[in-house]
Image (cartoon, rainbow, N blue to C red):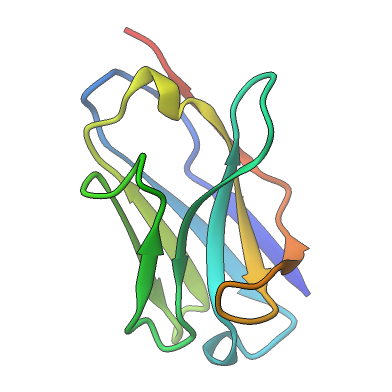
Length: 118
């Protein structure tokens, strides 16, 4: 199993950024996936999750209405579209594979850095 994130960058407050996570080593369409982030000096926190088929999503209150999680199982890729970015969104963002909906993650990517600065 391998999860490889990309797309992290420097973004201005109010700007947009899209993160990608390429999944390999397993059948992507059979697993729920999530994005988790770790701000500097803080604990990891849940950002968003998407069901295996993409029909159900869940978001942390802090990103609801601003971020959109999506997936393309044909491309084995999960996305996180970040809009109206705030300073507090700065973090390392990790893509994770979920054991079950609402459950723990069993695999993590290496993370991609999102920096927010004006």
